[in-house]
Length: 343
Ligand code: KG4
Ligand code: ZN
Image 1 (cartoon, rainbow, N blue to C red):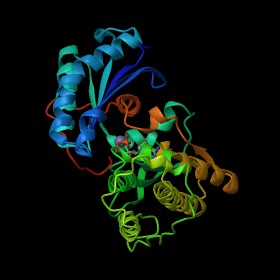
Image 2: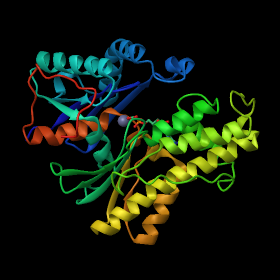
Image 3: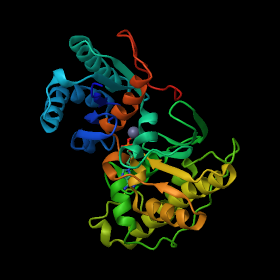
């Protein structure tokens, strides 16, 4: 049988990501061109700038991926691309590029839902296990899924307001720590007292599997105001007790909230496999608390390495590989959507 060599694209936000996956297992290349430097002066992603950068970067990133894999374009057997959700201009750039390549090479194209990419990304490095509970925690989404197999994915909870990563980014902005907030808050939190500030956990009316992080952000703002730290730029945040303690306390609250829901869902469903993914899955405290939970409740928790947690093309190629096995090809008039339920 011919090898499956999938070229996977993700241009949903501020990273131009292209990967090559062989037979659904072997990542031959996973190239990510980050735009953080371009967006940092604005304190967040500027959509128009992001889509233009994707357009400028794609040729180079594809060439680099092919070089790393030691392959030519003619070796590619299928193309997978994120078509939703994400910034619409960014998605359209990736989708148009992928469509023209598929047309020129005469190979199948499949559209991948970005969250499905995250959800299954731990399988890039761990053996496939079903059923599992999936926690996707990224900058745009915080969601829980019950997954029976590749096709049977049930959404069982999500955030009703901010995503966990969004809360990190907003808290970092509030403390003048720069963008993106997750990595910097995580680093500072490791130096602080996580018991210094106590927060009230949100109880969400929509159901016990649902999350809410906007109230936590407001509570952090209240602490900042009460301590007269609004608009204060700390010259050395890592030596500033207020900053490190606040980061540590905020991080504890986020990690405990996420772990609490996973623990409850695992107990209720009796499913012992848990897959955690998305940019926030890189977080040191979340990983520690998840590992502790695994021991306490005898769970099999999969925490992928950072490159497989954050946005990357390999996770899109992986889902694309499985979709193409099921003959789930897309016609060239397919569109991209900024928001769309997981399919
Ligand atoms: O999955 P991702 O790369 O992109 C989206 O699909 O959103 O996630 C990006 C998010 C950002 O909000 C970023 O601040 C957060 O992941 N993040 C972290 C850490 N590293 C990245 N959050 C907490 N701790 C981290 N170490
Ligand atoms: Zn993502």
